[in-house]
Image 1: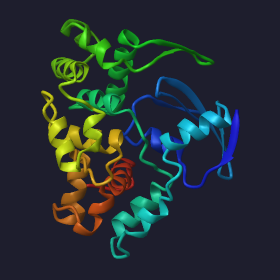
Image 2: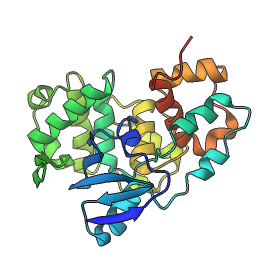
Image 3: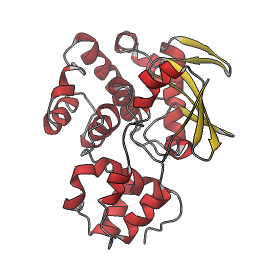
Image 4: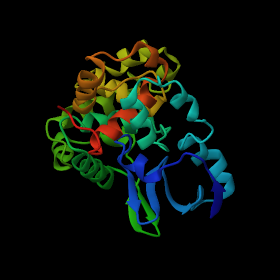
Length: 271
């Protein structure tokens, strides 16, 4: 166990923010499976948190995973004072952070996410892990790692459909096969510019700009990536005349998370 003080970290907000599907809320924090490991984090109050790992593991893995080396006040400071909506959204989403997640897991998860609610995405992703991942014994019982590209590339379409993937099964198999064979090198494209990264991700069947943008933002930490779903389209139409403000381009991904989280909270009404 390791305890530390962290400013601007809202565990439950992150779990509900739509950027990760294997983080579960507990009465006093969250538990998750990421990077092949299980972690539980307790919110002790007064900005104190307890991690179910050693200080060394926290420093070498989880500190980066939660993006704790970044001061998010710099993103909030760029919000125009006259932008009342985003000021409110950022205040409501105080403590949200963009996680450093695995690019392959993000690619597959957001392929699955198409035309699904967040609970349905979670269920399908978990079934995929149970079927193809490796078991992990945890204090909460047995959980599973996210499957590798090789594990999924060897799957049959019928097996994938049984995980609740429906028509997305073929897209998942195509993505896994391209990654497993090296046709899509997820490590190599990490060095590409944003535009090229998005283009390469869209060589996978069924991957359009939204899924590619989600993968770029949550898997590669490209903060200019701007995923636009139904909620974000509503926000842009009602608050910004249908166009993303140019002055927000540099940190679009972070500001988008504030908008998305706030819009879905019930505190904002689409007219």
